[in-house]
Image (cartoon, rainbow over all chains, first blue to last red; front, side):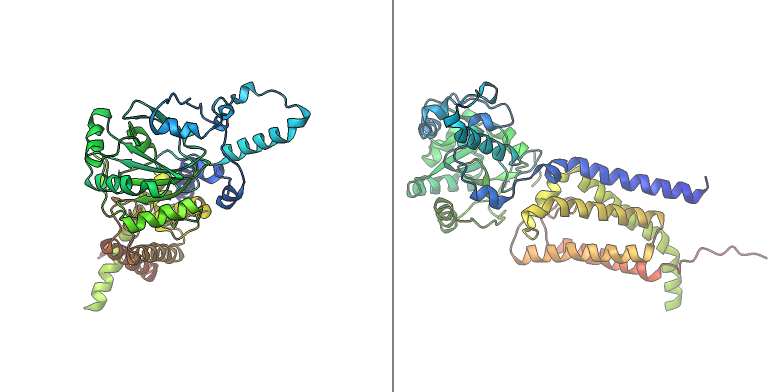
Length: 274
Length: 149
């Protein structure tokens, strides 16, 4: 084999190696995301059952605080939804609803799951477990059934403090949206945030792993999550009241929220590079 | 004087081409290894529709790798250098558009991954000039002549 052939083989192999590496790393995005945003928007799939999640669902043990308020919105049947394994053959009269449930599960399982360092509109959050200041817990499945304003915050971030104070004042104007403030710090370090902002019911702790999994490098990091648990919009950095009212109003009315990146007034998380 | 400068340039075009190709190879490798981060950067630019982002990201990586390999190994140098200039122009336009729209987003270039700014635009313009220089002078390289008696 002469030098030219060796060169050609090396070039071909090098190219194949890089493209294969990229394809491997992007396989989830390239081949896994099969639900178009429009269909996810228009499909009348109500609260997806807990059993629909492809990952092992962590059952919520929450009995108080906002998580319990969220659970209150579910019927007892929904709360005690059987897992896929325990599903029984449907009676003839119930066949249609069983089909609907299967369709809902299929739809839900086709929605791409965020993680591996990124999150985008149209995806749903990976499973997580947060603990509230009152000891209540919150996981991915408890976000379903209502609209959620999910903000990853840090108690040491001045922008987060301002944002929480503002939201504490205006959240009553948007009763259909449940706020969740997920702190990346543990409980004892997060408690001062409640004292500073007057907000305590909606603050949760232990979001560091979730933030890492979503590739969040700074706070506040805001996500609007719809009733199906699908992220509809992402905003990075502190928002002022008019912007907040604009996006919350649109989200509450079920309108499209513009996707605008805003990294100003943003605090980098320790140990990360923004 | 000018012809002397061009002569020096032609002697240097081979290492310039290889370094330039290596830069593309490095960025394609970085983008391939940090796929999710790269796609998030593309999303942050808010230019490509969401459904097209994964495939456009993959296409960018494949093109970068192709350009890098071809320039390092010396295949189809002139058209590939022009393709590199076009690719860099696309990146530059995207960056200018992000700056103009006031988006404070990560560059996604694979070179330090800083917030996008005019310095990145200037760097890309410089790289476009290098790509065009390679395309212009390819085939005119001179190797040092061995003096014979």
